[in-house]
Image (cartoon, rainbow, N blue to C red; front, side, top):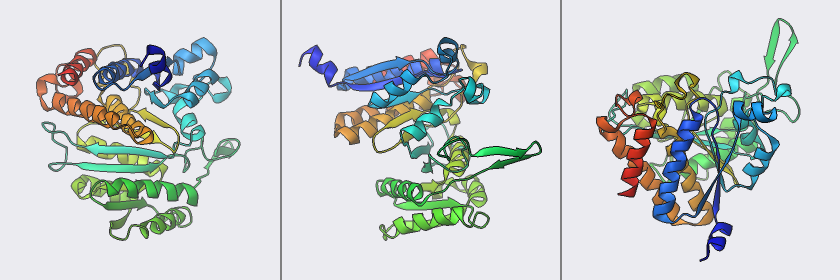
Length: 364
């Protein structure tokens, strides 16, 4: 095949650095993907575009329109963490890139594994291996719950209101995603809710989940109230397999589960829909750590492996699964040895040296 043909058949991955430690861990992720590409012949085309504060200074927007167009044309997206809480108002160019793409590309499923690693014991129990399937397009998130405007407003200077959106369609599709995940695992589903308080909205969510449950009669199924679930994750996280829940509950519980499993710095995450997928680290931009070569890139690298698995399924390309397994195995091998861990995990390696170790393992 000629170089021109290879380029035309390339899998285009749009890489967006983000803010804070984003550029450092995004660079590490690109290096790892390039190594996997070379070993497995993935024919990746790693494209780059600026978002966040750098884009704001250059174009007047944290998420320029040309980046939106590039994202819609890509086969996959990798987004570094962004400092959205520090952005100016939307009218002054402060668009949340993550929230915007989750809504515009209909990335309705946020899949967040929480898994402990050999040599890096969890904070509770002996071993954790669970996945949270978080609905990603509605709930209490004010930037994605209205046709026009935001779902948060102030009728008076002393009153702030927030509108929660729960639909049968969104609840049904995240439930089906969760059951399909469980079919590849231990076939157990835990639906998390607060229907004892939100009787209508969480009641609708549970109604949709139960309807999907009826399609999988041989699966183990349970329901937990969210506050009880937060306690159960601390008491005995090993009992859970796939957890399905609404947007805000999933956001909070997944951070809790990943930290219990070992470290939020190890937590992978994929935002997926029918036609698009975006890899993101679970953690934030950590601006105080930026530029010091101390950030742990494992979360974003692991998220990119999840993206490769999504691409493998979409393009019927098993070599992408092999590449994903190799990347995940490299991370597991590196963190198993205290000498090859990053500093946040008690090791001595910086971002660059840790990345070099991953590349060495991948290339073995």
